[in-house]
Length: 382
Image 1 (tube, one colour):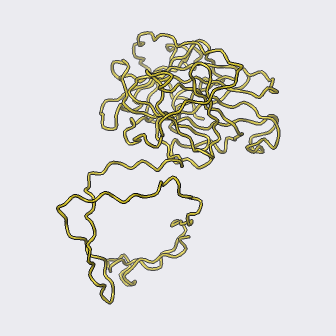
Image 2 (image 1 turned 90 degrees about the vertical axis):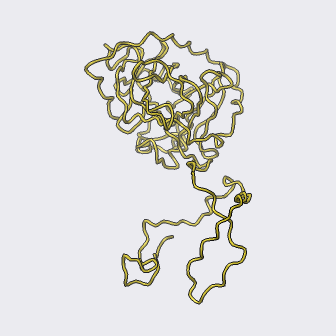
Image 3 (image 1 turned 135 degrees about the horizontal axis):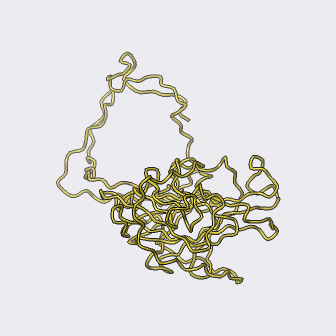
């Protein structure tokens, strides 16, 4: 991963001290209860999410809990220009991250926004830490409430003991798993002030295990092995495998949220955990998980009028149908349709225009190849 950009030469005045976050709750030996029931994440209006983009942000401080990489900075990460509070707001906001006293990094120089658009937090192997994230006004650095936003977390996976990344598969070939990520957050039921309203994964194919941890935390844990080759290269446009290792948390009407992060080894793994660590990858973009239809932006266009009840008889060479006459009465509601998520998308015909061949290209005689028949005809579409 690319190192974090250096802080500007002129540092702003340090913000007022933030109250320290609570210490992590002790682990529980009893079985975890099931995670709380939450609203259907597909019902969240994803077009209302705040436009958060770390690719254009600027690092002002980068010294979380005093571990560096810029040890002369205040003990926090502060970035400016991460986005705005709403899709239509012109004012920019930043984000401040502070930790409890437990936080340590394996490679602190990886902390902060990177060149791929992710916000990276590097965690050392033995750490179980709570991180406080607060959106702040770029000018005053006071907290700002964001009506709707999403935090997407990527690349939940584990290593394999004794296997190089190029040779391992998802199950370590029956061997032992190495470290994996656990990210925990509180729902709005457990924490009304700064909890998430809903979460979404890729459903039945997801490799992220969801559970509940003492103290009101919902946990998201890696289950299978991965390699550097399957890491996402950008925050959007993920492959199916990359979506299977991601989760999105939806929040509303808050200026802050908490994430509790730790790494977990299997019981047989006794190596020195301080010798290793993991990157936690975050973004503020909406991911199109297969369980939900993609968000449809609102449209100001009126509904199309109803079709004519008596279509004209077709001529010998059928021209395109005439548009229906305008109607002064309101358009009828659209017919009821089956749940789109119930459609078995694995049965869809494999249609791919990238490999197709153009035979004719002269729709209605307008060209570009005016000597072709008046149509467009392509072969090998699937």
